[in-house]
Image (tube, rainbow, N blue to C red; front, side):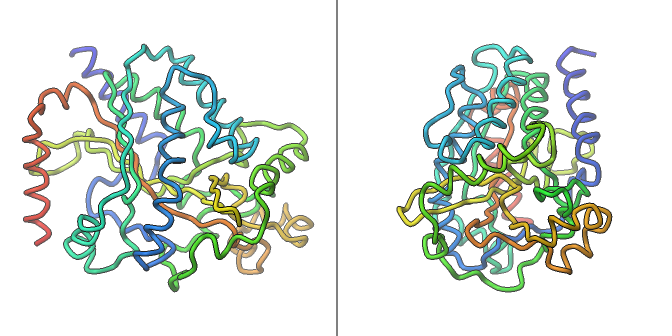
Length: 336
């Protein structure tokens, strides 16, 4: 067995161990955006795309200087990114081991075609308007990066607490299907000054006694679903292979039209009741949610994006793009 084959098997075992219950490779349940209005989704896409790309460019670049655009996201966000960056550097990824392709916002004509081809006209299922691609020279380096990225994430349908008091589970707080369209652009929901964007999370960090970055309070994103097309159990008539992660981000806006990404702990507001009854709520997340001990922070919009991980060796085997073209043709045929 070759070294790369062993690394492939190890990567697939790692994904299965880190994402229990999220290993399905076909017939996956749909993911929904908060809004079913395409104008809302494009508003959020253009508001977040550069920030989303900057996160991954920082993680895989040689520089250890956090971009100024991400510093606006607050101290917690920056410290978490720096911690993940340290893990990647410790893994000794060689220069050029990972190549980032910054994705433009998906073109409206392609998005609308996909809505009707694959989603039966349901715009809220459109979760790849914002996406980026990472190309690795080996599965070992892909695993090192994925491990560091997972440390920044909570997982949908897990029991990992994500509210700042540790009392609400992801399964309890976020319904999979939105009840109605938000229909409200980000700027209209922002009533606070620019300073709040950088200060809210900083203040929470200062009030924590241990400031541990490995705590579930310090998650920047939520993973909704993974699709590991590298896994041998993945069944497809196409030879196209990648590792796809659907990840939700929190977008915060100000009256000045500036945007920032909010850590998961800021997606909900903690009430006095939640603070007083935190331990009891922790034992019964669903009851806490029903009692209203945590409610959605209206200044934060949730938006699902896609991260694609590719293996450069497989890409080189498809230099002319024939495999991907065949995949697209087969996908269109199956969904027609």
